[in-house]
Image (tube, rainbow, N blue to C red; front, side, top):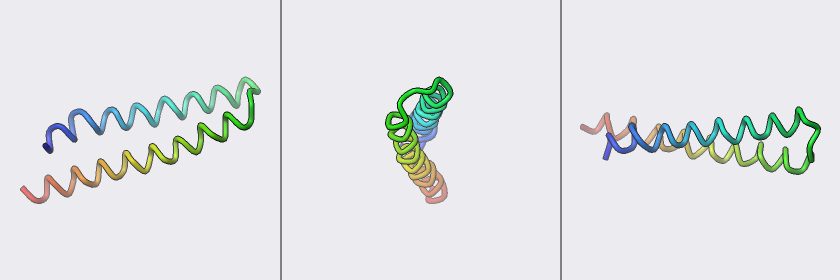
Length: 65
């Protein structure tokens, strides 16, 4: 389970955060909808929380072994 978390879920979570961050930045730079930009930034914060939770769970599980 630890290998699955560290080799699969953490990279997916980090990639999701990066993708949403880039989409939000591109929207802001192009002068797109401020509402869309805000929604993307809020989604980024949620995804960051999830990524941190997955990372901390992985660290905890490694410490239990």
